[in-house]
Length: 301
Ligand code: PUT
Image (cartoon, rainbow, N blue to C red; front, side, top):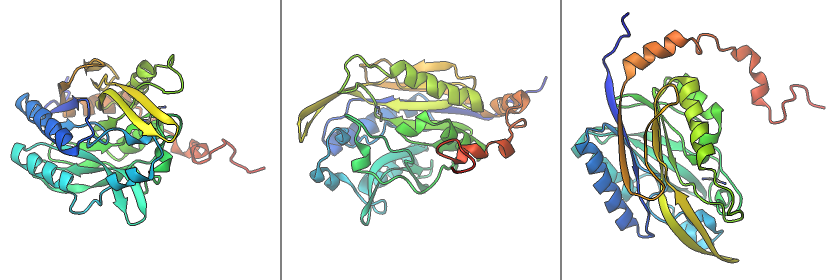
């Protein structure tokens, strides 16, 4: 049986503890990108908001100073140089200032250094330790698939990973690999709550349901932020991983160590497998209109 094998792509996830110094973190990201490149990686995922500590533990006006415009953004420009030199695809997560709006954004840099455009995080979490609604407007780009040198990729950000609709929307647009930069760890209000296994299983489901590989990169380390009510602390649980097209984990980091994970996939072989399994043939979008409601009611009371 011909499975149409051929187009091999190596993906990587890097994982590290952030300091609160952008130059330190950019240097660490660069070192790990170079290590991933040495291991043959073509598409390399860095964790969410890697330029500094996860400031959303607190609601502080001074933290808005961390936002930078998309255009002429020095971190993105630096990553464009690295991408071009190494011939690798780099999604670059950053806190975006757009006039009076702010977004949790990611610029997709192709292997020749070209900036392919922006995705702005759509689902913005709120709650103890993760008070993102204070900082970020809900993204207005919609879900996207970006055509890079090595593959068509779908990139969404952290809390987006809990929504199967996001993964499906990217896969429907032809995304062959899903990537999720992340910042998640302990819950300051409940020391008994550890979401790590839940977090992995939900994304493994997206890989399996859409028959695409999936890459998740999460930070490690303990970060303490001064808030209006005293200090807040999160220990980020790492566990960055790469899943294959049936949701199987093929590479995984632990919750403590800096890591560079690499896995190779044959995208043509996976395409055959996806087509053969039939889930995209058997979809019934005509029956899914209820998904466009918040309350499940097609007719309003
Ligand atoms: N990154 C957001 C995670 C929220 C966990 N409660």
